[in-house]
Image: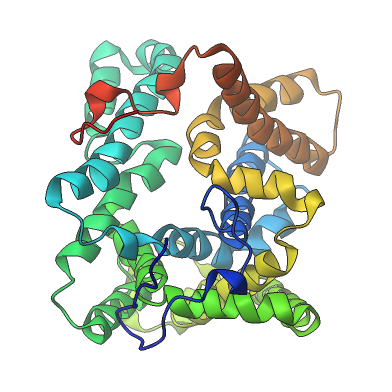
Length: 375
């Protein structure tokens, strides 16, 4: 990036390259660290909750998952929108190819792969017609862990279409969607309402995120201290339950549970998401460039690899450990399942890179591109 891009809601320019660590590949180190933390936390959620659901009991890792609940997905979506300014005004074919078809390819591919493993059980339980129907439904109601891949192109398209609208207006609408109790049962509508705000903030306020990262890198002690306070306060608020009867009637009616953690309440979750994402940016900026953080940075740079492929090693490891019963502690089982869920995609990616076989799993083939770039 040789130019300094102006941001849509600020007169400030993108910080100069000297203000943050940038890799030779053109990637920004702290952004990869941020994405690395996010993908590890996302996999942790599925690993821990999957084990606890199968075992019928909670383990000591449950506290980690609930503490970062208000931070995990807001930070992940905000990080996904940070560099959208580079390509939002690209020609339509290029935009559609890189921001829509790119994710559509991986969604269809990995949806089919997941169904290949799950279909036999579905057929045995409900019949082949039901299994085919479930596969078809997944094209309008995202399947399992793949919903993130499904909704990202929608966020890209919504942001591009909203370009003529003033940023404060779009922001106000996004905030309203986030705080309203929208529970339609249609995952795309519900998740769009919950998370579009964070993606749009990453796009519209990326200059602020880079400025925060630059400040944190130069002031590590106050940055880390502030981040620790935010995470600690978030953890405390996740332990406080609020009866749904205390909410206004529309919100109470939309709720499916009797109580809800204070951290998940409207407005509170918004504030915790903002503060938590800022804390995670600060921590990522402080740690960026340190050799022992390289595995986390690598996970962030290859977050789509881990996100697409973690389901199978996670499910297999969970099933084996619980059936063997060698380890009785649920928290330890959750930890091992989490490690396996992250290591599995890394090993698969390494094998693909070394052998050249299966590149289509993580790299779009030429035929699946609208824009026929030279490779």
